[in-house]
Image 1 (cartoon, chains in turn cyan, purple):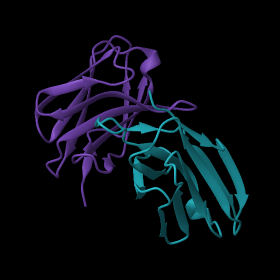
Image 2: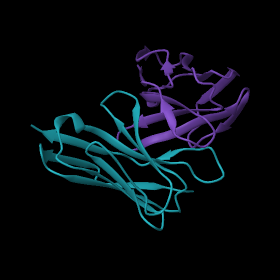
Image 3: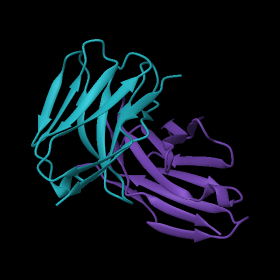
Length: 111
Length: 111
């Protein structure tokens, strides 16, 4: 079965620093989703990537999907305390409706 | 935007009790999911449903059952709650094979 591995598991950065979170799949991805979760709450959708080489940005967050569609990265530029939370990558394997998720990256931004 | 509502944010139940977690979505989505989230393990799929009265087991269905009598409502049932079912439970809905929308989560404690 497909698995998603995220790295790092946790990250502490100083406000204003850039950071990158990675998500690696054991199989080809047919849809890669990035979500953010504030502590103790539900998941908020950030971005969806479907095509190899695709890149999307929203405010200071950029997500990329590699050409082989097995790895995605989420990059935050000039981090702020409001970026703190848990970032999860999710994927919908082809041919099923099941969603799987990575174990998440816990981000803390120090003011 | 789509709204997915879980009946409780916090719940405390006793061992052996039958527990019902309710989830309602307002956008006529075919697919609905129940996950549990535990530190270090990420989101794990318990059950999902792709239509009324239709359900499929996810990765960790043991100790749980589900009910989907109406399209908008997907219930998770803990037949006899145990302490190892203390967790954060997240419901999601999805149209076809697109992004998933999540509820705010239910933090269940079984004592």
